[in-house]
Image 1: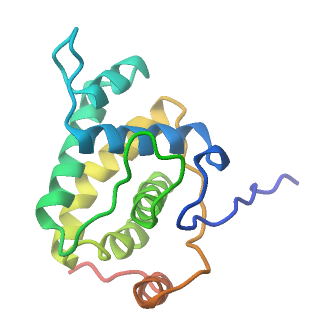
Image 2: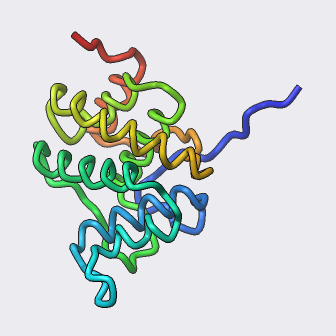
Amino acid sequence: MLSKPRFESYEADMPLWRLRTAEVFVVTSLRLWNTGDFDAATEEPQWRLAFRRARIELRGALAFDQFCRMLVIAATRSIQVRTRGCCALSRDEALLLHVLSQLQVGRPWYAAAALAQFCTPLAARLTLTPGHTLAVTLAARGLWLPERGVSSHRDESQEDLQSSLTEPARVH
């Protein structure tokens, strides 16, 4: 009988070379979105060009943009997104990868619990809609995010996340 492969947990400062292609694509796109840089030849955002080159349909690109915008607007704290050239993952980038992986496998309550690290529970639930669309369009192109746990190196906020992930969030 085949078993699911196990992946190491995300951790802060995890080198990008230890990530799979889908994860590197999402992190790179997030970093490009965060810079706001445009491609000189096409006059479109660089992150959008990445989606086009990966042949991800328009609704996926729009969902990505909406997902990022909603996070920025609803954030109750600063979200750490590293620069494009950084070769290590931030804790927040790892949490966002975790959110999308949980949405790909049909666990929106875990995704909402992780999003609650950035915003209110209501905003987290609202952000799930574009997040789910993004997760589905990534999967349609074969960009599956592996299910990874959250790092065992804990601070207070990490302990809150771990305790919130033990039970599904209640959606009212």
